Structures are given as C-alpha cells and as structure tokens.
Length: 92
Image 1: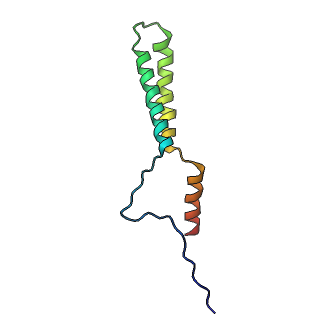
Image 2 (image 1 turned 180 degrees about the vertical axis):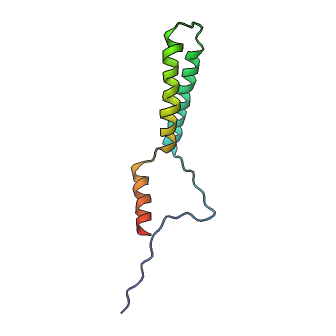
Image 3 (image 1 turned 90 degrees about the horizontal axis):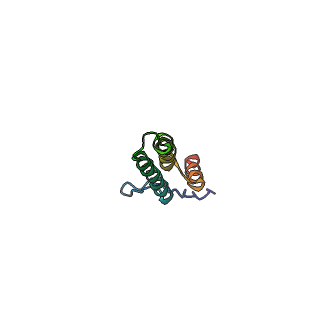
C-alpha cells in the first residue's frame, strides 16, 4: 500500500506578495545612527578651533554612526528569522 504524500508547508512568497526586508528593530537602529551622526555634525559646528568637541568627539561620533551603527542596522536579523530561513532551505 502506498504512503500518502505529505505536503511541505513552505513559507515561500507568492509572486505578487512583497515584504519589507527590514523590521521595526532595524528602523530604530537606523534612526539612532542618523541621530548620532547629526549630533556629531552639531558638535563640529562649535565655534572654537582648539576645542575638544570639534576635533575629538565629533569625528568619533561620525565614525561610530557611519561605520558601526548604520551597517549593523542594515544587516541585523533576529535569530528566529535566521533559523526559519535555514530550515526552509534545508528542506528543499
């Protein structure tokens, strides 16, 4: 007697459906990064040339914003999402 064929439950998107690749957490991290960049530029606007803020703190904030927070915001995924995607690809 033949076994009944089980249908695989796949969470594949239909051709017409589109989902955003970024989640709420990604957008919050992106806003934090933009806020830190704006604060860095505001510190750079300080009038004194010999001050600590425009020479030391502002560039550090800009590097943190541009090189750390913005890329993390774009690449961050939760562990549950990564596990579900790996499960789907391993079943195929």
